[in-house]
Length: 218
Image (cartoon, rainbow, N blue to C red; front, side, top):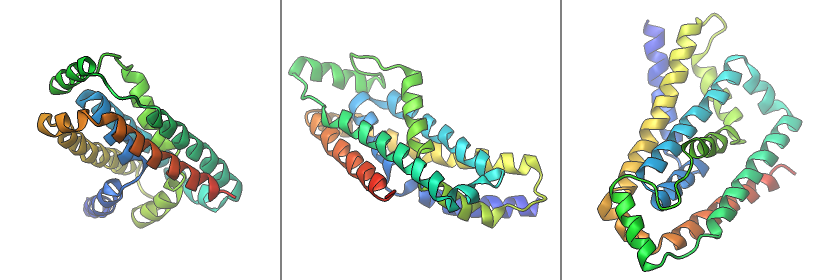
């Protein structure tokens, strides 16, 4: 029991800092929340938290070390992850300014925690967050470091499951906080008139991150 608690403390302190660090996940959640409202932000956050399950599963089988040390595997992940970030960024760069009628509708939708006039598929939004996290090329190296601190060959399965679920809860908790702040009516209304510029700036940041990831694969 003491080993479990110590492991949770280590994971909590390290993973909270990792979750709060600016990166593709943070940019995506911010963009989705500001553009489509609280509900979309929560769904995207859920997808990101679920994306951790991929890293947790392969790490639990010792595959994180294999991936981190494999030039071919890391190259493939960087190409896939970088390309996906570029694709998401280009979508943001194509954002259009809203007219007054659309703006009024968007503000009302945000206040009600709803999506805008073009309702997005909940599954599609969750999948977007899931892929953004699952294709993060830095994840294998991070999880090798993290799991080396808390895992041992004789660790029971239930303890591994507790660690994994706890990490997803930390991830979901952090991004839910971000969503709540950005979807606050007072804050959100101030962003709506320049939302297309925010989409473009965040989209540009996403493209830049994607290009950096792809370039590092060479």
